[in-house]
Length: 88
Image 1: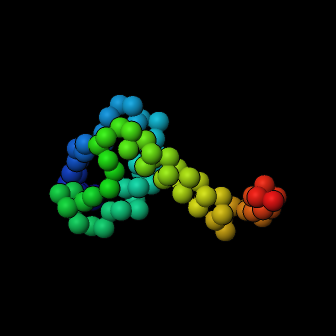
Image 2 (image 1 turned 45 degrees about the vertical axis):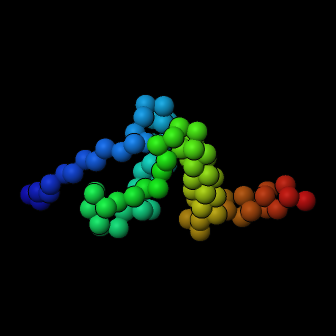
């Protein structure tokens, strides 16, 4: 059995109103964690609710675009064609 010490951090941006964005937080955590430990880790998320909401909106668009344009997406060409048609 593998054992590990679980270090659960607390952050300024952990507020109940951001619960629907759990997936975004998970993506940001995976994107920013560099094995530096919890004390030296910065997600660069603001504790101000208005600024945090703007940051989450930008991250959402970034992650959605990355997922849609991924080579793993079997509908990638349809998505690409749709966006090209929409921009004309």
